[in-house]
Image (cartoon, rainbow, N blue to C red; front, side, top):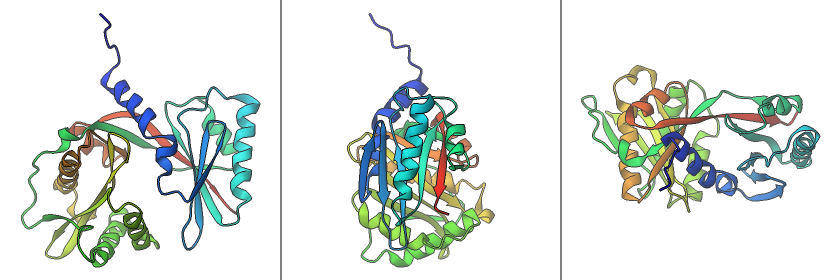
Length: 275
């Protein structure tokens, strides 16, 4: 009898690599092409376009062959004047181990590392007590979601202490492109949005992502983010989703770990920006 020696983390990582990379990450891209192991997509918007590079693995490429692949990718996006930037999304378990240094040598700038969290959606679909007066609500499934999307975008700006000029436009675009697979949720009290988050079902996979989770500073530490995550998990289970995934910051990772998700790898975007 064969014995499955894979750890729970490795089984989840195998599902992640096989279902959530390559073409799956280019859902919504207006165009894409291939170069060796890479999938290179472009997402167009009214102001400027952005590129995104994804792959399952690099197929053992290293040395000059890898240098040439990176150089061709930079040249590919540089040749399109509509593209303002592109992201090469790396994972901590990918090879070669010196990929980060090679990308940086070609002018790509690393952003903050995040932890990839994975687990069974049912583990998070639990009842979580809320502070008095706080209510959770899904806002995308109404005749005119725009007013609530505006309020949610403003709350997200407050939660992350940064003004995102295209925040509302991005919300509307995502909703338009994924009406049947994306949900927006908010937590509010007396008309004030204090936390936001979305659920994105990944078509053709067993996964849904929990993204955009943010709680304004004065309402943190009260269980609101965990409750909002639990409501999204319940909705995911109702949709037949098996797994949830999230790229988590140091703030959200402990909450998701307490809920039962496992840390399986890390991810770090490398960004090329047109000068």
